[in-house]
Amino acid sequence: MLPLIPADLLRALGLVLIPAAWAVAGWPSAAVMLLVFGAQWLTRWLVPGSALDWGAQAVLLAAGWFSVTGLYHRVEALDLVMHAAASAAVVGLVAVAARARLRRRGEDPGALVRRLGPVLSAAALTGAGVGLGVLWELAEWWGHTVVTAEIGVGYDDTIGDLAADLFGAGAGAALAVRGQLRAAGSAR
Image: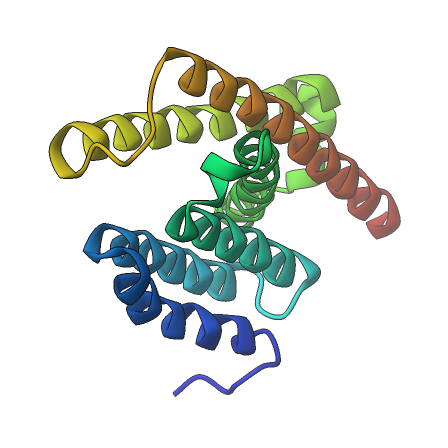
């Protein structure tokens, strides 16, 4: 059994919000919160108790709950803000996973960033974040088409979401690369 850590309080909230979402808005909303809950456990596996764990969980919980309550339809640009924030958090998690993978292979992540350069490294992370954003938009379209028309899609929504994903992923990538370069510099 995993020892409890303070950040597990947000995971407990995520668990409670699954049936709450069902009660508020039906099973598709409960499925969204179940997806959020799964992502919360991914943060525990990758970065337990860190600022990224807390921050990513908070962003994902807010994004899911705003969807459940229909807040995106009532607050202009909230969807874009949340797409940017979620993309930044996801890119942070991708960077952590990539760093762990490199270390398992016996490679130095800092050396790789220095060899590729910070711009190319950030571009790769940004591309990963935007790629995941594209998959999310495809899932939204599928949900709108197959599950319920209440899931908002459309050309303007999709393009706006992807632009926000690009902005957030770029910001997250810049922070991740800067952090890796700092860590590599202090390790010397």
